[in-house]
Length: 74
Image 1: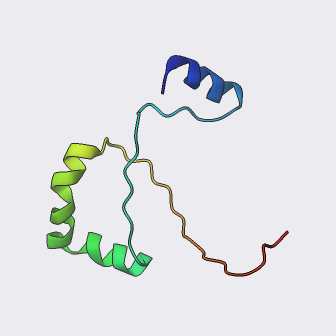
Image 2 (image 1 turned 180 degrees about the horizontal axis):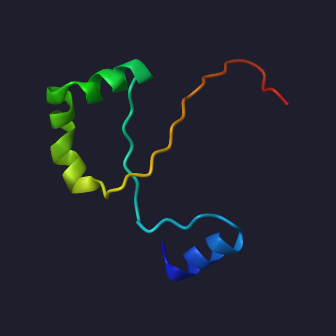
């Protein structure tokens, strides 16, 4: 994010992030995520990539996708 972009975001009341990218980690359910982080071997599979691509403390955004087929809802 350029300094100008940061100023523009802040002028709109938005939080300007202090980094230039974001990593996504997708799981099929929260149960899968919980099982992964509770398993010492599972969490260790994430550690090498986390050390390369993540900055601590982590900012977490939680969401889900919803596929809607048919007419749009107004």
